[in-house]
Length: 246
Image (cartoon, rainbow, N blue to C red; front, side, top):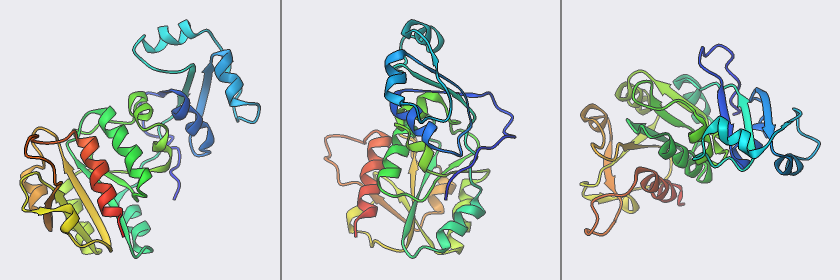
């Protein structure tokens, strides 16, 4: 199910940058692009079939716009954020599938981590990403760059109360799996199949108590005792790989 442009979000326009992120945004008909800036070399890569004519500019002008630290590769698009799903739309999409999984993030706040997680989620056919309204980042250029454009393919659901949302998901047949480094069961040992919601907490504090109590089972990644934990984006990629195994 494609995401649509939300014309009433009341937020600042988004600046998307980087080859993969901009090209994916241009390919998504539901993404409203207001302006496209490219170097001459980048514009040549786009070809003539794109839906908006690029403004050719010098690389130094893009550097001035984004800052020298932004790896833009000569591609910049001024766009509107994509419309996000609500929980009812996610439940509706899941009901027609026998086996599916979603990813739930509890207070993962770094946009680049969220972007990397989105990229992995699309790679492993995740149905949607669920986050809380508070303490989770909005879509940004840094997030889209880290996602390598994959945000165009993954519905995002924001909820007011994460533990309450998990209870609603339980009622429609989801098995709630919390990732916890202190769990006794490894993720490879749990039963696969059906509808699964994988819950990832923040790197420092993990899942909050009420969210953890909403989980049906807690599992861990079988990592060496030489390291306490993995970066949340790395851990999410491994967890999604395991969940996706048949």
